[in-house]
Image 1 (spheres, rainbow, N blue to C red):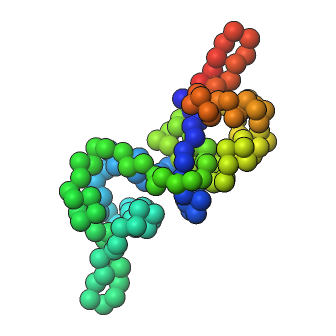
Image 2 (image 1 turned 30 degrees about the horizontal axis):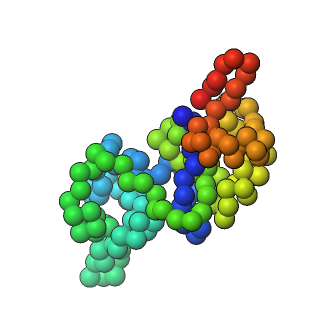
Length: 149
């Protein structure tokens, strides 16, 4: 499936279109200090999950305290975004990322989707169609007797 509904906190502040860090877990282990290119992503993920950073003697921020937070996790498992009362459309064609802002109601999300989101490729749907698809958990485009997911 290429689109799905997630319930996230209303103040969920994660960039639209950027793959959620928790979905990378099965591909890499956190905090390899020799690979400094991953540091910004690692710290951003820690901030979102509320994981404290180690603070060095000179006051600089260090690596997140993943071992304490996860209690030595099996990093092959995905870490879902935090749960909340908001409604957000996510794409699942890649690893998974938010594709809409967070809305207070499903109705408001579907109004946004009618104008700004696609069901498949560049096909769009009405607000009512979005409500039905997201409620059923099956976003698709129907063309004659074919269904595209």
